[in-house]
Length: 165
Image (cartoon, rainbow, N blue to C red):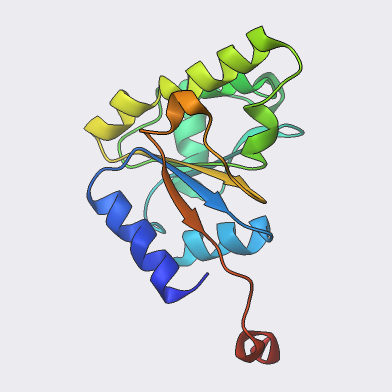
């Protein structure tokens, strides 16, 4: 992630922005950079994906989930996972991988429940500097969330960055 990108994400966090959508073609690199950034690395980091459920990405994230009794195999369902995520401790960063897949379904009821479960994070997260980061190759916020989600883009690496890798 570029310094500018991390700066924008940090500003969003510092203003208690509860939900951020990031378009990224490299989710693992995005997650790694978020976890290494000074504004995020000393906070509970929790990740959701549809194959694993909720997992802690650092010791504080693991402790947060343990305190809730949230086990990965019991949080594979997105709406259930967001229900647990709603009760994470102050400062928690929740990273949702492939969020676009969770927020759209062929079943209107499933879509409505998934979108509502994210919308339900807004007010509790805003109160105590928690943040949900929704990752997707091209994140487009559902109409119900458009006013609540800050959209950012993780740019493809520059030639200089590729050479450094």
